[in-house]
Image (cartoon, rainbow, N blue to C red):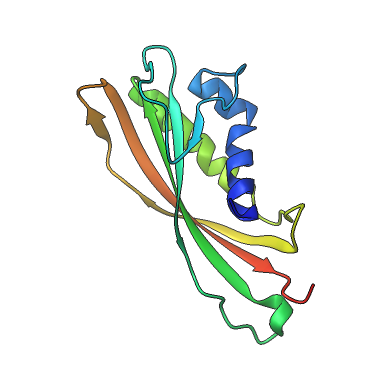
Amino acid sequence: MTNLRQMVHTALRDDSSLRTLVGNTTTTPYNVYREDPPVPFDFTSQAMVVWHFLANTPTLPSSHGVSMRQREQVFAVTAYSADPDAVDNILARVRRIFEDLKAVTLPSAGAEVVACHFEDEGPDLFDAEKKVKYRAVQFRIHYREDFTS
């Protein structure tokens, strides 16, 4: 996992409010999964968040030199719950977590989140077999890497 992806995962997994909303505050991974959720999953008392890395843009040119070039990565986050209100609440919290990523410097690399934008929200869907409602949202993160170090 790249540092930016690890930061997204850690921000979602370690948020105590999100843990409470999904109903798991005690055992890792706190119902926050990257791409592959566990099967089967009991939705009667808990919800789940699954995030995916979708796309990466090439380095965007900068008039400020090589060390100021920006890149973008796009992420999708899907909330699953038997309770439709829980899906709304989980995604509202996810939006807040992504908004708070602005101006965060990645601890193990010379990279900085410049901006994070909400891009898209899918329709409310229902899985009749699992009796669970779900919806996905997408975010674009603009970040700057220090290519000189």
